[in-house]
Length: 230
Ligand code: C5P
Image 1 (tube, rainbow, N blue to C red):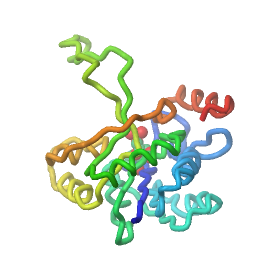
Image 2: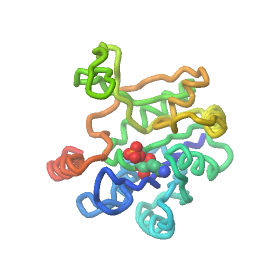
Image 3: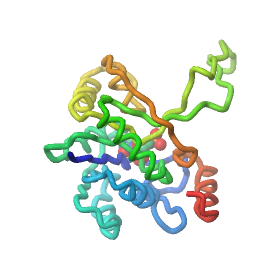
């Protein structure tokens, strides 16, 4: 049994405003990507790591990951959209993988237990697994600045990563999405499997698995680390 972790880390991260690809933005002195991988490897369930690096940064990323001591780390170049980057990562997987995890570098504080729960659910027979949290805000559908309706939040969850997959349907979903002209690029891999009719299962997510997107998220992540909460 081999579990491979694909980390799309090739985004520009413009919303963070740090002037660096987001995965390389420092948090308590280390890039977000290093924080994310350290926690993934501490889960004890990851055998192979494929990092999809920002354009022109492959050697830099390889050097960053050396000290983490993972047995099999591969670094590949990314694509224009997140889904292109994940597809580049999937192409670098070795044969014999029974679980693929896809994890955003930006969810850098995701605890090891979430990785273990996702892998266990895939090995328990699920085709696709996502960690989720209840939605605490009231959510409304809008058109411009006009509210159309209020959505019943009891039916909603917020979805995190790592998302876990049976490799063959994940690859097929990426190939299908690649061929789909005019469709909006997917922001989440499980959504591509849903579109093909696969059942996606949930496991509990974690508050500390939030995605560092805006400057305030970095402040929160620093506070959690310095307070020993992540
Ligand atoms: O931009 P966003 O926060 O949604 O990106 C989610 C993850 O996907 C990030 O870790 C980012 O580095 C990655 N990404 C990528 N290739 C892209 C765009 C985003 O690997 N072209």
